[in-house]
Length: 199
Image (cartoon, rainbow, N blue to C red):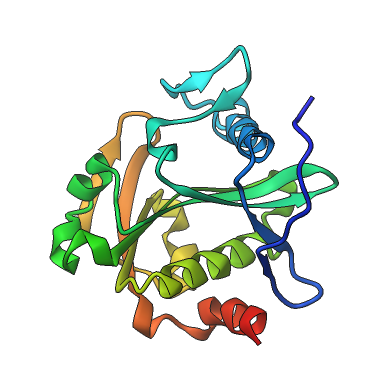
């Protein structure tokens, strides 16, 4: 049985939009690990070394110094996103050539973004992205980096991210495209949630 989730709210946008929460409690994190397993292993069939098949969850060393955002519905996680704020995992910093964007303290990194199959045409992804933007902007970061499958590039371009000259093949998840955005010039689609919440 999936862990029960608390109801504390950290980001709430327009009334019809999903509520994004930051995970702090063990039950929240466990629910995210189980949600990831369901997407990466059960749905996509990825042979991830960190997958715990006995507990049916996916937790990585990089999770320990990250912030975790999630959206829940009917007591279950339906979307999640991992943020590194000013301290990138070593492998990501190397693969993404993060130094080209300035000191690491000014760079954010988004990873492990996923949405449940039945919610992929909903506002869950946008709400998570807006909450992430707010976290990075409040931390005073200048750039945000991520990498994704080639099929997802257009989705991130609609949020203002742009591909740049780093592409690589991850042994576990396949071909990846590096993307970046400057926090100061992020488009309204990212700023909107932050502005509504702050109003």
